[in-house]
Image: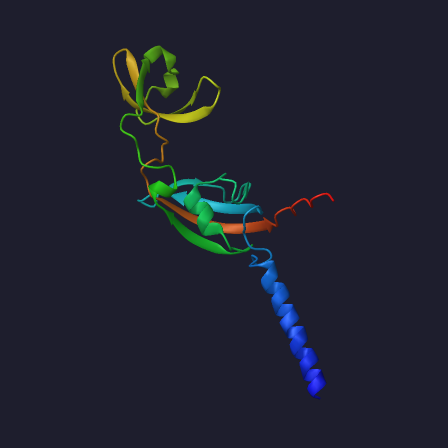
Length: 178
C-alpha cells in the first residue's frame, strides 16, 4: 500500500512539474495573441447613436495582437470565447486619440467634388504615397474649403456591443531546424 502511494505521489509531482515548466497557456478556443477572430459588433457614440455595425453582414475578421483594430477593443476581447458577448467602452486614448486642433488644411474649393461641399461630409484624401485617410469638411469659404485631418472619431469615447463568432488558434511556431 505504501509503495502505491509513493508511485501516485511521484506521478502527481511529475505532472505538476511538467505543467509548470510549460508555463501559463490561454484556454483553448479563447481569443489570444495570434488567433484569428471573427467578430460581430455595433459601434455607438456617447449619445447612443449607431455609428457602424456589421450585424446581419459579414463578420469583422482580424488577427489578435497584430494591431489591426483599435487597442482598447483588442485588449477587452482577450480571453473571450465564441458565442460570448460583451459591452466595451473605449476612451479616446485607446481608440483614435484626442483631436489635434491644428490638423486642418485649406484647399481650393474646386479640388473638392460638388457633392462633398457640405460641412460635416467625410471625404477620402490620399497622401503622396497613396495612403487613404478620412478627412472631414470643417468649413466652406468663398474660394477654399477647410479640411480636418483628424480621424472622424478622434476625441470620442466609443461604445461597442461585441459578440465573438469564432476563434481559430494561432498557427504553431515553426520548429527550429536541427
